[in-house]
Length: 75
Image (tube, rainbow, N blue to C red; front, top):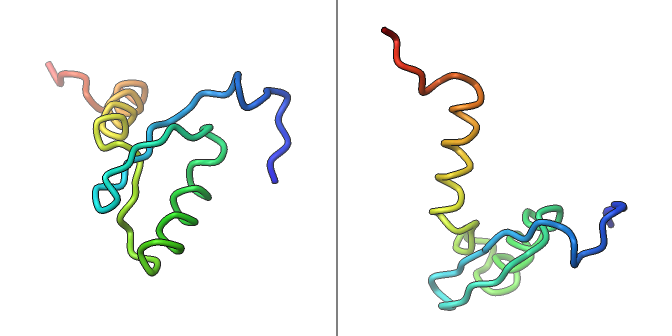
């Protein structure tokens, strides 16, 4: 269990999608990995089916790359 000073209502929530179940849920950021693992273990025999919404994951990757200067032009 994670202790945070934020209540679940205040914590950022991340969309998690499962194309096989045709479901989307919003999970507190601190619980994403556990929620995905639990869903996949319980419903998909541990196969990696549910995941963070790919659009959100791509946007986060872009933000990190920009922050690290990986997307700057080499003029």
